Image (cartoon, rainbow, N blue to C red; front, side):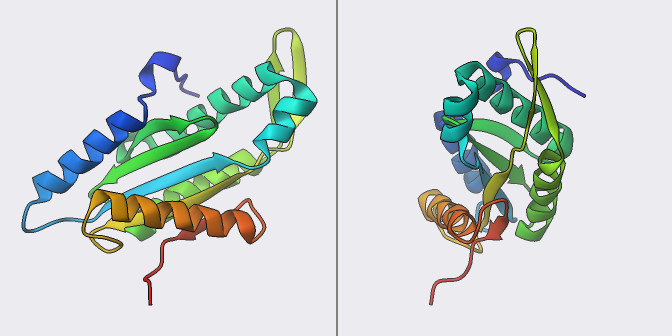
Length: 169
């Protein structure tokens, strides 16, 4: 399994800059550019019950799972807290959905996390939203909003799900 060093994870500002650059490169003939927002379910409970070091270990484990699943199809950015954003250039929304669904499934398997000298067996799940440019918006902030709304739908409908952005009526 590949390791993901803290320094390799770029933040939200880098994500936004890369996303807007990808949209601009598309020009008048845009290709699908998909994004995914991933959030660990009930993360506060993990920190409270097992300590922040365990929470940090889960975040790093999720980053490795995402890296192993996405490989060269997308770039991973730390959104903040326990959330990640992935930028998939030249990937349709459905293709991005399948990759994120695979990461969700992998993370849903029993996890053994080592914190210091202690091994913990934790049940961890993620909820995710997936949206695409230009299908879900003409501007980056519109697509990000749709992606956030899809994540919210996954959370309120029971967590441990991947939801696609949907067309507003």
